[in-house]
Image 1: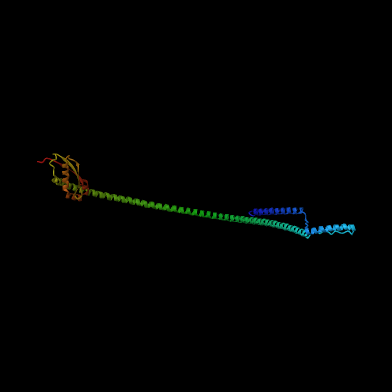
Image 2: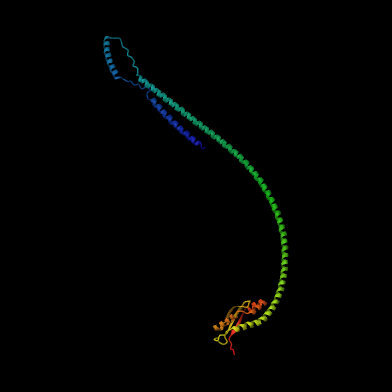
Amino acid sequence: MSYILPVLLAFLLHLAIAVSLLYSQWNSLEQSREMPRHIKAQLFDIKKLSTTTKSEQNTAKDVNLAEEKKPEPVVEKKIEPPKEDKKLEQLEKEKQQKLLQQQKAEKERLQKKQLKTEQRKLEQEKLKKELQQKKAEAKKQRDIESKRKLAAQKKTEQEQQLKDQKRKEAETKKKLQQKQAEKKAAAAKKRKQEAVKKKKLLEQKRKKAEQARIKALQQQIADEEQYAADQIAAEMATSVVDYINNVIIRLWNRPQSAPEGATAVVRIRLLPSGRVDGVEVIQSSGNAVFDRSAEQAVWKANAFPKIAEIYETSPAYFNRELRSFTMIFKKVSTF
C-alpha cells in the first residue's frame, strides 16, 4: 500500500510532461506547414547588372537593326536559380528531416518510458499481489499455528487442572488425616496435662496443708516463745523504766525560774543498742527554759546499756514498748 501512491504520482507526472512535449512539437509542425517550403532568393551583382543593361541596350539596338535587316529569331536562354537558393533549400530539408527524426525519437522515448512505467506498474502490482498472497499465506499459517497452540494449551490446561484437582484432593485428604491425628494427639495431651495438673494441684494442696500445719506449729512455738520473752522483758522493763527515770532525773537540772507545778511531756526514741536516737517535746510546759532543760537531761543520759539486753531477749517487746516512749517532767516543791 505504501508503494502505490508514489508510483501513481510519478506516472501522472511523466504523462503530463509527455503530453506537453507532444503538444509543443505538434504546434511547431503546424507552423512549419503553414510556412512556404521553398524561399527563392536571388543575388545581383551591380557591375554585372550594369554590364547586362548595357548589353541589353546593345541587343535592342541590334534587334532594331536586325529587324530592320530581318535576321533570324534569337532563342532566349533559361536563367537557372543561383546555387545559394539550392543550398538554403537543402538546409531547410535537412532541418525538417532532423526535426522529424527528433520528434520520432522523442515519441519513441516517451513510448518506451510509458512502456517502462506500465511494466513497472505491472511488476509492482504483481509484487503487490505476491506480497498479499504471501501475507495471506503467512496469516493462514499463523492462524493454523495459533489454533494448534491454542488446542495444545487448552489440552495442557485441562491436564494441569486434572493434576491440580488430584493434588488438592490428596492434600485435603492428607490435611484431614493430619487434623484428625492432631486432634487425637491434642486430646491425649490434654488428658495428660489434666492428669498432671490434677496431680500438681493435689501435691500443692498437700504441701500447702503441710506448710500451714508447720507454720501453725511454728507460730504456736513462736507465740509461746514470744510470750515467755515478753514476760521476761516486761519484768526486766519494769525495773528498766525505773532505771531510765532515775538516770534522767538525776541528770535533770531544774530551772529555778520555772513556776511550781510546770509539766512537760517528752517523747524519747531509743536504738536497739540503748543509745538515745531523738528527743521531742510533745506537750509544752509553757516555759521554754523548762522544756529545754528536760530535753538536755535526756541527751545527757546518752545511752542506757540495759536496753540492749532487753532487745536481745525480745526485739518485739523492744519495738513495741521501748523504741519510742514518753516521760513526764514536773517541777514539784522539795522539803
